[in-house]
Length: 123
Image: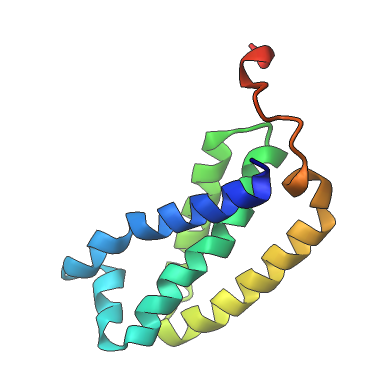
């Protein structure tokens, strides 16, 4: 499987990973329940973010720590600017655009398959 489809799957799984938080009072996700569109936007926005995290992972020589730090940075900045559900919708558009640019510029990275089945050869 190429990194493009891995990113789609990763983004979807990452999105569903946050699903239980809808039911815990006090979480950002529970606060989205006032409008179903905000809930949908939250879950849809995880998919393009999956592409960006994949790019960070590959650009950092497959560092999970780099991905964790990037995720922490994104969450911190969202809290720092007190992002509302409305501004999160704008952020989703910006993330989709950034994702499209990254995938376009790194087509060779996202669509290559030479890494498939070669994981153990690196060790």
